[in-house]
Length: 123
Image 1 (cartoon, rainbow, N blue to C red):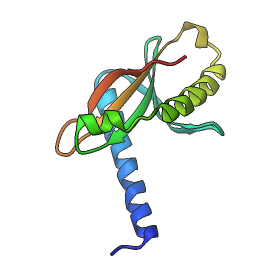
Image 2 (image 1 turned 30 degrees about the vertical axis):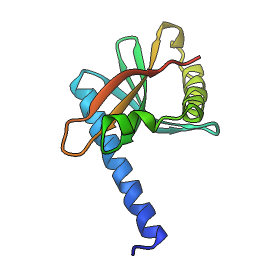
Image 3 (image 1 turned 90 degrees about the vertical axis):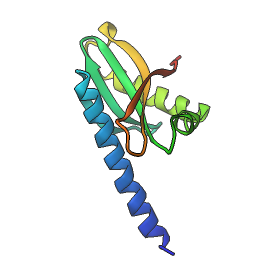
Image 4 (image 1 turned 60 degrees about the horizontal axis):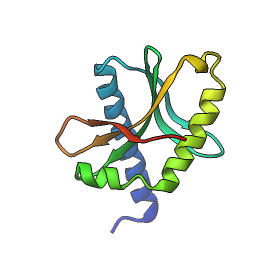
């Protein structure tokens, strides 16, 4: 049995790989990745992407199925993501022009990442 540190390292690498795949999928749709793992004292955003005036706040979930990935975003997670998004947006000089959307990219085994729009709605 692997020790806890080995499991954490493996999970960390898996998370990085999943976020990289999600970023590639969004770039293929014409989005520019502005931030990866944007951290604030209130929460973290996996990816922030932009195409024109549309800004995506993206949660990346690596699960066995799309249903599992969607169920993995709890209301508490939504609040933390919203709080971090508020901080990021407040630091953008042209934030008033942005249309903001909260999306998810599900990274599933042996499939191209699935981009789910409006996985939840911000305040």
